[in-house]
Length: 131
Image (tube, rainbow, N blue to C red):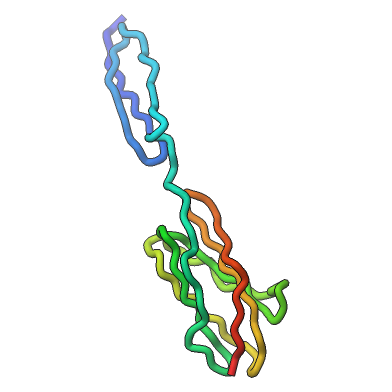
């Protein structure tokens, strides 16, 4: 039998490792330390508030302790009923979500939902009143 070499590559949570073996060698058992297998640490939604509030629109400004994707549920009751579009990027931790088509002089409630590889988080319920 011809002696052949094989490259075995493994990736765990973004950590790449590889080793070379030949056909006349037994395959080693890979080991993985706990620190390599641990996903990103837990994160938090640090602050949130309504800004740029007009009669028919408002924006929510919020920050997370890590880069996350987010969307906002909002409505005139705490059952919400509307939501913004889920952001497509994980590349930032400060977010601005705009809500339009609101009713003047009305109180709105909102909840922020975020996600990344460390998991999902939800803010406390916030509120604002349009002009």
